[in-house]
Image (tube, rainbow over all chains, first blue to last red; front, side):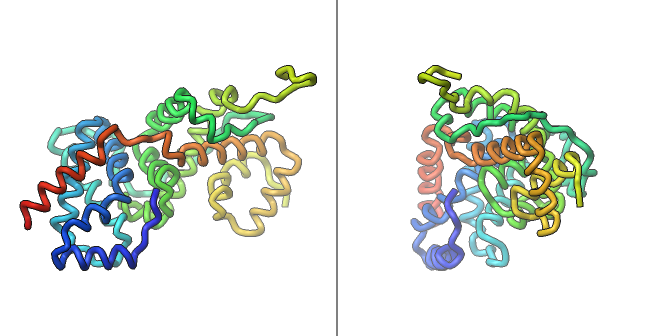
Length: 209
Length: 80
């Protein structure tokens, strides 16, 4: 994720509206990933998500004049992406069990994590192995949608609580509760699967312990 | 105050994000010093949070960006 720079964004927006249209490419570039994955989460179809992402970018461009700067640019862009996705779902007549609009805080509820006594960290280098990425993706894809979106924006795109709440149209409290539950679910699913990706401890004489 | 494992689990996510107050953080830290299970739960949860933030986990489809900007170029010309 690229950190946003509100002053630079405001400057670009001013120049784009004044006629330097080519600058729009640079303005939208840092938002591309978040737009696509938010739409993929909603639509669950790569081709549809890509088309919706392109439509979103065009709508952002055509409505740029309406951006008031009272939220972050990316938040505004993601709310346009979300509306694009929801509009498509409505058109497809998809019935949704867990609506994104269900904005109230859920009960925190109890959960039991995967109980471990030893956990060895899986280093980021282990992502060179394709299976690890596949296991992580599958675990996240298996989350109920309201949790998946929060994980996507908070932990994958590393947006803050306020920005995530604004982009999803839910309260900050709901973001925190959902994130907590999502991480708990992921820990429970992933911890038993990922031990093998941790570096092996070397025993005496260089043998594997 | 002594807190139990369940209490620690309820706050793990907020703890990772630095969103628990100082008193609760101190209680959790004290608990973690002696509880291997909660330490492992915390470490594993934090580990996943770090791993999923890696761009290699979720990659854009090949050519996504080129196609997006090509379509934008057409749009920018149309509105010019």
